[in-house]
Length: 252
Ligand SMILES: Nc1ncnc2c1ncn2[C@@H]1O[C@H](COP(=O)(O)OP(=O)(O)OP(=O)(O)O)[C@@H](O)[C@H]1O
Image (cartoon, rainbow, N blue to C red; front, side, top):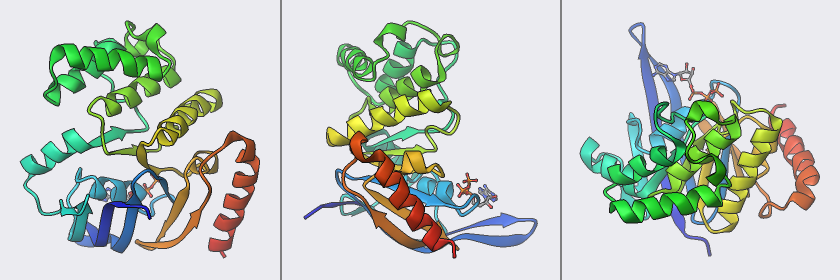
């Protein structure tokens, strides 16, 4: 049986706007299993990113509880949460947020140093990761001298530098063209088949079918979920058809 890695119970999140309280998440209950590639979908504005930031402790929650590996992480101090984020979580965003005047290699080692790794170990791991992400040829270039796909693959290497238990990805292909998206998605699929747990927000069906479990967020709750076998390129078309049919069934 699969182990629960991350659990959200009755997560509520509201934002204050013009003196009004706007509820975005309304008692979300969900879990992420170890080894899974879990995907969150939903209409624009449904609260997908809000949920990702809440689950990863990047943002506070209004009420509810979050557990990681069976330990409560909601309600920790910012310092305690920062330690868990640095050690256990990796983040990939739509924009890479690479430091513009550092090379790809330097961007990755800096993240490793911040996490407290020994320089020699960090440098060796950064080189291995860049090679695994197929960007070793571009490692000494600045982000501005690389393609969007190379930069995003370097950002994934940065997310992996601490050996995270879970990678959170928010629309990782949202700023990429089709071929760069495909490269990045292939990489995420490979990481997952090597055992990396992932939680990704996307509105793109072609990205979502890389997951083996898709959750649909609507009206501040998980409305439904769809499970797929572990990704294989051979059944990509069939997965896309099945997922599109599932999504259309929810939109009636
Ligand atoms: N800091 C904030 N203050 C006020 N409202 C916010 C804040 N952050 C998000 N919201 C609102 O919360 C709602 C959900 O936003 P969120 O970005 O989580 O949605 P999403 O499903 O990820 O959307 P998209 O697919 O368009 O990125 C939106 O209406 C947004 O305007």
